[in-house]
Image (cartoon, rainbow, N blue to C red):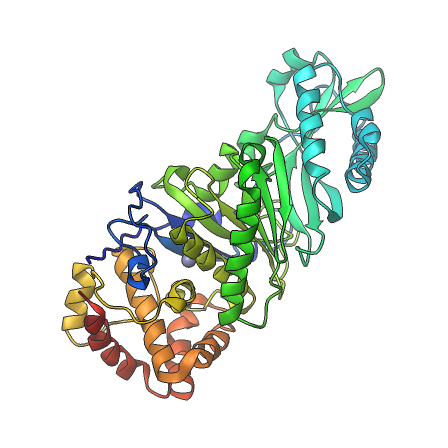
Length: 482
Ligand SMILES: [Zn+2]
């Protein structure tokens, strides 16, 4: 059997805009090739066979930028107050009151309170808000809070729509899903408040969506009808049109968590939120990069922090136990497909290792460990179709671990080298050794410390120097090639 690995990189700069103190993401993509085999031969699942869905796994480590004190400059369109509103403090107080009631309505599932602050001028908006309330009512939240961050957006063209004074304050939503989010998650929104008969009412939550950062107003409940499924270890937030797949999705999620936990038994909560909605805006937020659309993406793991770059006054320190989401694209993800099960396992590995992953953790180790975990139950590997570059490097007698620039150049080669390096480490010092190496390099806080840190970690943990390991990796890789 012939194996091919094709990898596409995720654009780092695009991801950096999501902000946060430290962000790592992983994604799997497909090339549209339909799987034609139903066998479960281990070697078939390599990244990946010609007959299987081809996938790319990407993890992007992002360093916080800005944050050097106070909030960065707002968007160019921001100005306050808007639409002839004179008394800013009174408006702020009214906004606060509406937002506090709205938060209480969500936490108490009180539809009357929810509706009481809505502008009734637009029936379509009321229908959207009804849908949003039904979606939110299916999720148990430990907390839900709106924070006015102190600036308004200016949209003069809305005058013709509202025929009344209005303001568009920027709002940071902080919420935590009960039993799943160890800490609140922050999302940026801009809400439109309209003054009718002396009262400030909520007129829209999407007037300024196009100006929001990538995570803005893109939660699974925000637009389309949603259904939820709770497993032992996963919460599925799925599109209502996929309700018939919910049981399968829950089973696939729980099974993937079990597979990951058998490799990573400690250090994570084993509670994973899996988002599987068909909201194009959400998919674009997380999947679109500078070079590719969300069309070909199957899944991605996304950390979720309680701050947003440019919106939070103090981005803060990375929490020791970050929240995260695994987002899958229902257009491509089939819960019963073994390749997709591996994909989910790979992504959930990123969730499991996130607490021990820092900016300076070598990407080859982060991705290699995820591929290793997804494939570890399949036994030995033979017949790999190696990329020409990796094959040539292996023939030269040494294969460098792709510590920097992992998502650039021959990305498929990087994944294969990373994965096989992890396999070789396991064959030398066992899975406990691979975990020990990960934990040691999970404390590297600076990206440029990655290389010296891994060189220092190899002798005590892998019982050889990195140089000797890279020389041993070359024949190991060739021995697995077809
Ligand atoms: Zn990955």
